Structure formats: C-alpha cells, structure tokens
Image (cartoon, rainbow, N blue to C red; front, top):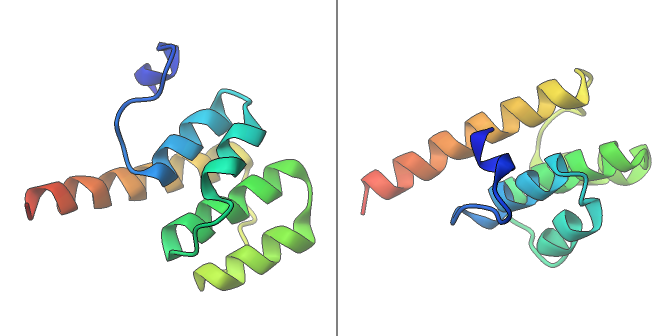
Length: 97
C-alpha cells in the first residue's frame, strides 16, 4: 500500500503491477499489461479488472480461465486478497532462486 504513493510501481511481477495501476484508478493501463497473458495469476487479475469495470460477463470468463469461483466480496477486499496472494507467491518464488 505504501508504494501507491510513489510515481511508478515497484519492480514486481506484471500481475502485481497491474493491481498497483488498478488501485491508482488507471484501469486501462492495468488492463493493457494483462491483455495478452493467459497464466492463472494474470487471468485472476484480469477477472478482477473486468469486475471493476462492471463487465460481469467478461469477468466471469476470466474467473473460469483462472479456475476460481466468481468473487462476491467487495472490490477492495478482492484487491487485498489478490495482492496478498501474489506478493506471497512472488516472495516464495524469489526464495527459490
């Protein structure tokens, strides 16, 4: 959350950078980062972005691509959960290097 005060996102995996831009109300920028990606993580964030947009049919498609149930909690709660999960995964991945 502290990084949101910076002018640019920290060096993180693209899915986290997309969430950073989404939290800064830069939906198009966030979406552009994920447009051509099809990993589970990118699909999950892509679903969130379409939910933010209000395009629930498209969001549903991306939730299915990610293999998860459609989120029903608040957008803020979903963002926090996604960010936490992706940060934990990035930390685990860097520990393996």
